Length: 119
Image 1 (cartoon, rainbow, N blue to C red):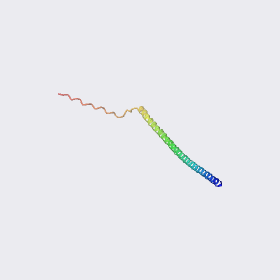
Image 2: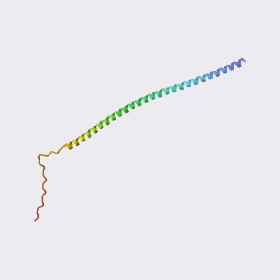
Image 3: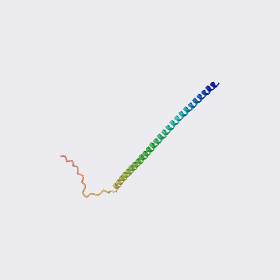
Image 4: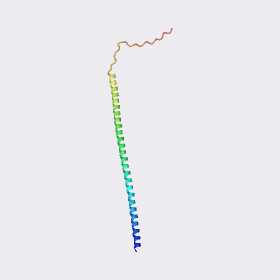
């Protein structure tokens, strides 16, 4: 009976070893998958940070463009106001200027030749 019992014990030991080996392989596979997921998450986080930095840079550039546009608009408005003021001033000056009588007589219109009498 010892031989049968020993074979049975050996088979149980092999089965237990195989089961432990399979569990170890499964744990290793899970650890590898977890590490890959962690690495992917870190890469995604790095990409998100880089994207956030790019977005912040673009927003800053957009703000700069808005400021420049506002400055240009203000300058254009000032130029337009100055031009309108100058036109109004010229109009006002034009209404206040009285024609000055000139010291030289104005040329009188030349008489048109009268038709000569026919004989």
